[in-house]
Length: 275
Length: 240
Image (cartoon, each protein chain N blue to C red):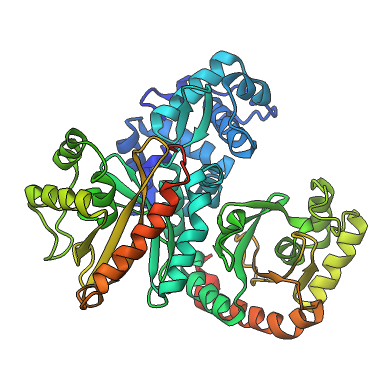
C-alpha cells in the first residue's frame, strides 16, 4: 500500500458483495478482489478484464494495479499490457512458512513419511470449500503443478479434503459440500452431494480416507486428518502415489498406518496449546 | 502493508505497522481489521499480527506461470538424485539472489524449504555465476550497491576480490565459494542463459568445504552444474 491514507478513500462503502461493515476499508477490499482475480485466472489479465471481472471501473482497476505494481507484488507486461505476480510474492510465502509453527513441526515428519513411502507427501488445510496445500514433498518433479504449495482443490473431491471435512459436524459438512464446485476432476470423481456426504461419514468412522484415481488419473491418494484444535482450521496429511501395481487395499494396509503414525507424531510435536 | 512482515519480523503490532507504513495508528487499525477480515492476517496474540496461508495465492500464481521453474524442476531434481547432493535453482533480483527450487540433501532434510529465501548476490556462488554473464557496467553497479554482511569469518569482504572472482567465472563458466555463507558449507554454480543471451538463473550444488577441496572433486561438480545449466540455456526460455 502507498503512503496515502487508504482509509480516506471511499471508506465505508459497500464492496462488490455488498458487505457493509463500516470498519472495513473499501479500497483494500477492492484491491484484494483484484488480487484474487489475478491469482485465479489461467491467463494473465489486462486492465479491462480485471475491471470487468471485479465489477469496478477501468480507472479503479488502474489505480489498484498501479498500487500493487508500486508495492512490488505485481509486474506489468509492457508488451502485452497484462499483469502477473512478481518474484517478490515469494517473500510473503517465505515469511508465512517461517511463522506457522505447525508447518515447522510438520516438515521433518513429512520428510520421514516420504522416505518411508517414496511417494508424494503433503499437508493441506481447509479454506472455505477448498483445501490449500501448505507443504508438499514431491516424488516426481516432472509433474510441476504437484510441486507447488498454495495449490487449491475442491475439498469434497479430494482425499485430503475429505479427511478434513470428516472432522466437521454434519451440518457444516453439508453446507460446504452444497456450496462446492463439483466439476469432476477425473472420470472417476464422485460428484453427487449425497454420495459425497455418505463417504464422509465412512471416512469419519474409519479415521482415514482413500481415493482411487478420483483426483489424478493413475493415482491413489490416502489422507488422515490431524486432531482438530479449537480455533485452528482442520488440516490433513496426504500421501499420493501411482496406482499402477497397487490397489486401495495395499494403501490401506501399507500406507495408512504410516500416515496415522505421522499424524500422531505431528499432533504430539505441535501440541494443542499453540493453536 | 503486507510487505512489513518479513522473516526477521514475522509478527508485528500496530505500532510497528504504523512505523513501516507511515500511516497513523487509527488508519493502521482499520487496515489490519480489514486484512484480518479478508483472511490475509491473523491475530497471533492480542495486538500482534502475522501472515496467513492466504498469501500463498499470490506466490502460487507467480510460480504457476514461471517457465524457468517449470522447465528446470526435473533437471534440478535429477541432478540432486544422481549426485546425492543439494541442488538449487536460483534467480537474481537486482542485488540479491532468490532460491526458487531447492532439492535438499539427506543431511539438510530437517529444515524448512528455503524457497523464496534471499541472500546478497555478490557473496553467493549462484549470484556471482549470473553476474559473470552481465556487462561490466552492470557488474560494477551491483558490486557497488549490494549488501556485504560478514556472515562467516570466510566471507570475502573486499569488493575488488569479488570482481576478480566474477571475471574468473566468466572465463571458467562456473564459480564456487567456500564457507562464505555458512561455516563449512560450500557451493558451486553455473549460469543459465535465456533466449536473449542474458543470464536468467543459475544451477547450484551445495556440499561441504571439505568435499569441495578434495582432489578433482570441484572439477567434477563444475562439469555437472555446467552441463545442467547448459542444457537449460539451450531451451531459449524468455526472461521471466
